[in-house]
Amino acid sequence: MDAKVRSEEKFSKISISYEGKEEAELVCSTIDKITSKYPIKPESYTCRISNKKDVVVIEYQDDVDRMAGKIFEEIIKTLNITICD
Image (cartoon, rainbow, N blue to C red; front, side, top):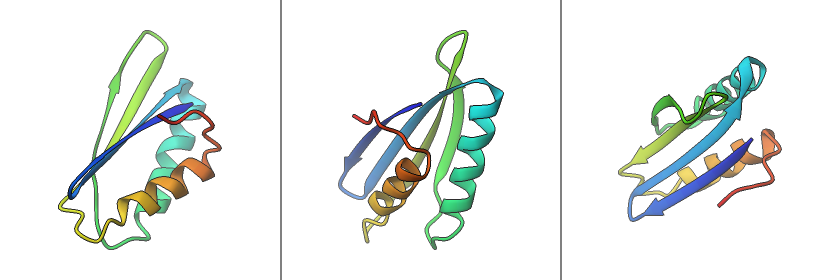
């Protein structure tokens, strides 16, 4: 697994790539568990980037309080992602 974070004023996005059904279940359940703890709700979608890899994208718009950074950090730590651009 690896991740890429992009952030601008009031907008934050993390893309997490994963491979296989096992990783997909882990990523999705972790994201659901963590994001449900916070009052702001993200938009998210999943897409295929190669024959083996998929990516889930989580976006927060109008993040005035900048909560997304804390949420993304918690997701990255929980999933033990070591590669994050």
